[in-house]
Length: 114
Length: 399
Image 1: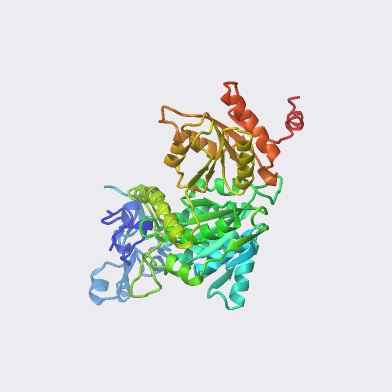
Image 2: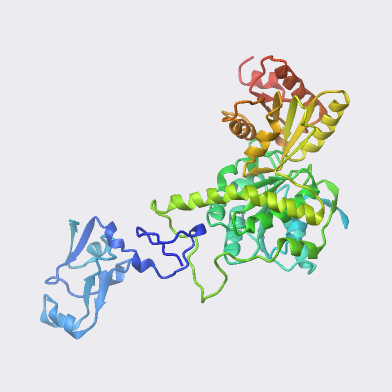
């Protein structure tokens, strides 16, 4: 068995760099690559899901459960029946596509501070 | 059984006898007959293999990698520009530790375009991590072709290998070749055992993964270790082959060297001419010897130093040139003596590029310069033999 992850530790070195334990890309937290991070402003977000469709990672999560939908702020009460988006910062590489695509400019793109 | 075959056929027979299962290939002079003969074997039902016609050599070696990675014995063949086109993929084959075997019809590179014999094509792939064998005859092409699989697939090695046969001098020349029995080759080479992967959904794996700076160097070190270990494995396989088939191979073979003042170092088919020439000189009482290099990667440093250290002059004759330095064999051979206190004078002779025949006249010129050096006179480090120097100097505006 070998564990070989991008940026992670290599527990066993294999010959030919073969990875015999598949499905390990989740271990690779690509969020560490980010320089700028998108931040959703829920008071402006109209829940159109365009960012969710465009995210190449995909690092924009979609919540369909009633509790999350209701407790998340929205510009209009009627929008609360629609799904809510959330950014998964573990995997968001900060490409800025969501920020670029958002039709109501509800996503800010701010410098990552660590 | 003795058969009369061309050098290309000896590679094709080696693949057939080794029961190669996939042959992706793209035709190029002078090695076209290899895939041609193999497709004939397959069409006649003599060989159970998949022939993959591809659109380029780049694709041929890529398909070879795919097939080898998924657990079958793979062979292919190319030459010259075709091998050069494979260049970037050759690193992938060795980096992924895939024991592919490739026959090369050693041919010159353009420009000017030339389809004839020299070793520039394989020498230019020196650092790709492939083992390199050079055959003197069609028999050697067949034997080395079979042995290459056993060496490459050895659990201690897992590296690809090239077997070079000289363009036309071997590829297209009919020679009598002793064809081993299928059952003997089966016993010798054995079944292909995939190292990591079979096409088994229950055992998935990632091949050709990314290697960050934290990991990359470890894999390269692994390849270095494998190539170093190959030195011993090659000896073992050569010995086992001799025991089973009666033909002797060694990384470096020496003849008439015990008392030799001058030793000629050769590779490939020019060895046969040189052997006859050395015999003739010996009849005249001249103390000249011959050393043939069969394995160029891994480079047999120790063996060469041992066999050459007592000579006065070592004349390296080679069919390649690294512009700005000299021949590749000369450079490596001279470097092998770096830590030795007692060392011979080592001279480089560039001969037979682009299919120019290496004849007794060529060898006479080489030996004359070597004798001059043995007598303490100054001789150039790198010497071009049998060349119209006057014409070139004029063209370069130097005369």
